[in-house]
Structure formats: C-alpha cells, structure tokens
Amino acid sequence: MKTIVVPVNFSSCSANAARYAADLALALRSDLHLIHVIQVPLAAADMMMTEYVYQEMVDSANASLQQLKADLAKRCVNRVRIETSLEAGNVASKVKDLCKQLQPYAIVLGASGPTLEKFLAGSPVASLLHNLTYPVLVVPETASFHHFRRVLLACDLEDIDSGVHHSLPLLKDIRSHFGSRFDIVTVETHRVLTEEQKDIKSGGWKEQLKELYPEIHYICMPGVEEGILEYLGHHDADLVMVFPKRHRLFDFHVSQSRKLAKHSLIPVMSLHE
Image 1 (cartoon, rainbow, N blue to C red):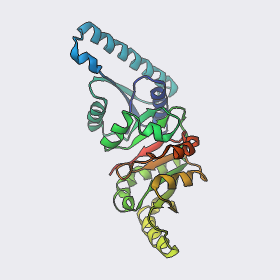
Image 2 (image 1 turned 30 degrees about the vertical axis):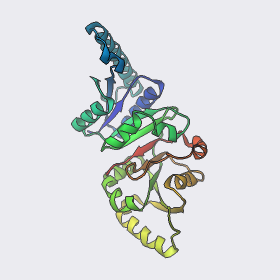
Image 3 (image 1 turned 30 degrees about the horizontal axis):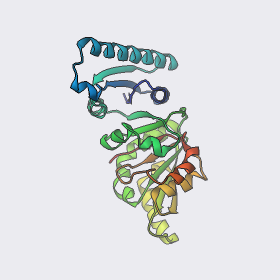
Image 4 (image 1 turned 90 degrees about the vertical axis):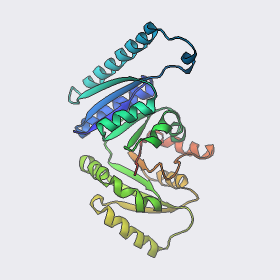
C-alpha cells in the first residue's frame, strides 16, 4: 500500500496541504501519515524547560494532530487509513527518518506566499526539497486538489540523460490513475535547435517515454525558469514536475516572479534521481 507523508505545523497553509493530500490519497487509494515535529525554541537552550511546560507542548500538539486526523477522516468518509506521528527535534531530520521507515509515494508540503518563487525559497520547504530522495509535492496555500489531467514535466538536457528514467515508474503510475497528458518542456539556454536536431532528440525522448505518449516542446530562453514561464503563459497545467538538484527553479528576479503570481495555484512536485 502506498503512503503519502504530510509534515504539519497547524498553520492555514499546512492544513490546506493536509486536505489536498487526503484528497490525493483517496484518489490513489493510498494511506496518509501526518507528522508533527515539536521544535524547542533556541532560547530554551539557555534556560531550564520544566517537564510541565514540555508536557503542555506535547499535549497541545497531540490534541491538534488528532483533531486534524478526525477532520480528514470525515472528509474522506473514512476511506483513507490515517496514521500520525508526534516527534521532537529537527523537522527535516525527523521527516527524513520517517520516510526511511515508510518509503512513501510522496511527501506533501504546504507553503504560503503569493508566488512559487517565495514558497519554494521558504523554510523548512527548501531544506526538505533538497535533502529528501522521495518526490516532494509543494502545495500553495489556496490550491485545491484536481486530478492531474495535464502535467508539465520541466527539464533540461542533463535531465534527459540522467534524471528522467529514475522517475518513469512514478510518471506511469500517475498516468494510470489520472489518465494524465504529459507535456515535456526542455529549455535550451545556449542555442537554438534546428528541426533536425529536435527530431533526433525527440526520438530519444519518445523511446524512453513511449508509454506516456508525451508532447515534447523546445523553448530557447536564457534560463530554465524563463522557459517554463513562457510555456505556462500559453498553456494550462494541473501539476508542474521539476528536478531541483539540477537548477534552483524559480529563484530569480522579482520582476519575473510577478509574472508567475497568476500560476500560484499550481502544485509543484520535485523529482530526485
């Protein structure tokens, strides 16, 4: 049985991510695992934290966690098995430990902010994005779950050779569940491809991804981020998939982030090699 892991901190964006994950789990017929990590304030290192104060923190967090579990169970009409974990320590470390144990289908994170640039750069999102070897799905604060009918797989030439084949089982599973259409966008940052070169590269793509029946698009722009913006400006997508180890996606000038604001409802899934 697949499991979706959701780190929660009881903020509004975290609660929305949990609802999104519950809807996704229902669609995938997977389990859901909520984890909350109590972070002791740094200032507490210089003072004595009494057992009473710590227990109050634990009791409060546990009550919130169980209430969230109950709300999600009702949302899914009890058709999703929901487990919970309450830990104390570093968020990234505890989530990583849980993932080693569960081998999850994906980790779902909530993030606030008016643009993808801001929420991908936030903490602890950035830390988890770059330190987990499982797919990480970042859900904007106001996004609601929709079946992944149209998926944008954003990549560059390095991803073609090294990253994509590791993600084929996941991509095929998404297509199987949702009947997804994949639009593969490769951004050429240094040169304009001739039609002959495009045909050659398309042939390689189609051989690797022939079971997905993708549409392949080539865009020549100064950067990968600009190329994705160019594509999203003219096409719809229910999900954007990226390879974060290759490039710091959406970490660019504020004038460009304004263009991306209208796409802030699109969840972004990071894929790791």
